[in-house]
Figure 1 (cartoon, rainbow, N blue to C red):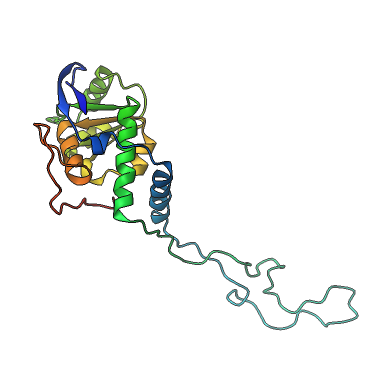
Figure 2: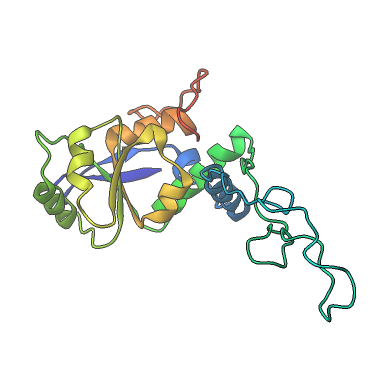
Length: 227
């Protein structure tokens, strides 16, 4: 399929051929949902901890005699029924990590990229290289491209000036293509990708189409990060 390429002034300058496998994949809601839940679960620290009645401090002496007090029998001050006592079925340190096959993780990313392209929420730009961090310049570029909502800017590689220029803008985030995730794609409405980012994504998760439109096979290329 073909996608238009925009200049930083918001004008279409050319059309590029992109991988149908990456930008025309049928949406699989179950796989995308599983990938989202997995990423959120893996981000949990799992360090919450409470003490049971055997772990809290307190005497083991019986509080008062069993009978003839007019009160209910009580044997321990550490009972969960009493203030300062243990917690029943409270959280303990544990791992929330979930496993997911690599093919399913890559499918989830392809589904999200395809959904962005299909819904008109994907814009490819020629390049985005800033000489110095300028929030005003980034805001001008987004306005020229017609971005009036949350936006995710994806570059081919790490761009420190781009990231610094975007971090002070509300609902705008910049990142390299190699660490793109399903949560990022779900969290931002507009996806801005540089042409180099598109080629990087094709190399990692698609067919690796070249500029001429021909397909090339993946030769053992594995994505970095948790994708």
